[in-house]
Length: 131
Image 1 (spheres, helix red, strand yellow):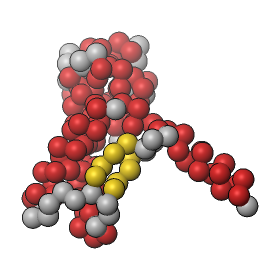
Image 2 (cartoon, rainbow, N blue to C red):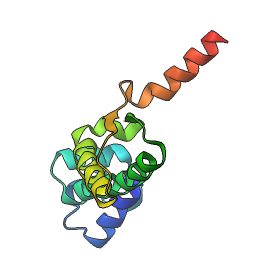
Image 3 (cartoon, rainbow, N blue to C red):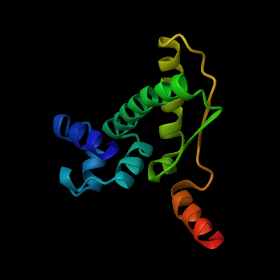
Image 4 (tube, rainbow, N blue to C red):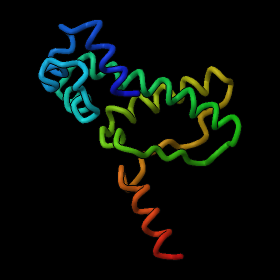
């Protein structure tokens, strides 16, 4: 979804996506997740907006999960988590706003997976080892 948002932004606002498009050789279809992250770190407004959009929609889903299941902690993993505060800052803000709109206080802590993008692989290896 992050790449889709970034590609759409690059199509509609190519001048604003200068850094992002430069990383993709000027070809929107070549934009990849790592490019979006590095472009956002370099201040590309389209890449930053892509992170804000993904954070908003992810927060909506997390707020629904909190209302249904009332977890203590929500752990976010996958490659996008390597973006750190580019994702987690807007995500936490949007998450609190989404819970407030639903008249529920933010109870569950949202944090990145400690093992980052390798968490699934490490878990699968541990499961195979113990069987």
